[in-house]
Length: 144
Image (cartoon, rainbow, N blue to C red; front, side, top):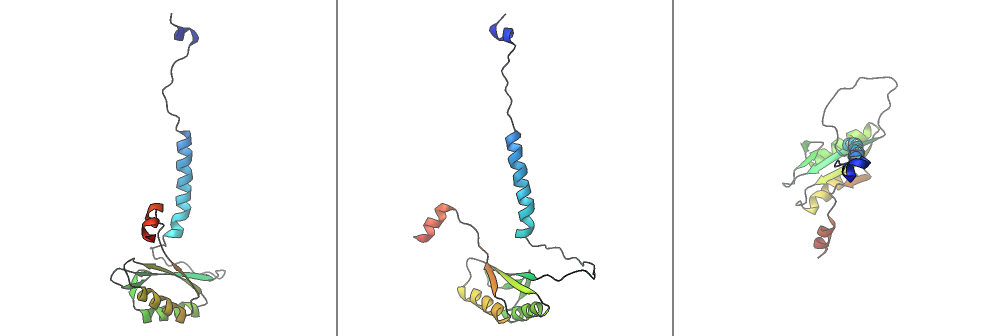
């Protein structure tokens, strides 16, 4: 009888995946919460009317400017003049509008200034320029 058989201990060759499962579940929860905030709803629905419903206090409008400098408001192509009119219509309905500007990195600075100017003419005081986070090494290359 060998020494291992006397004590009844065998070598266990299993991997414990419990910590991995915990990390995956936490990441899943974070993505479930963050995704609707990052990506606006692209589905158009007609919600029912109710007497107890309150209007939104703040409305987010997303302006996108593609590489050809075409301007889009919530996925619909629009001109700068129409942008002012559309935002003014939203502010007349009692909404405070915040503008998110999503511009291609190759566009002219003048185009962004025109969009911000049109938004200010319509009464928008809050806007956000959408960017992506750089890797730490890439930031050093840009500074040079």
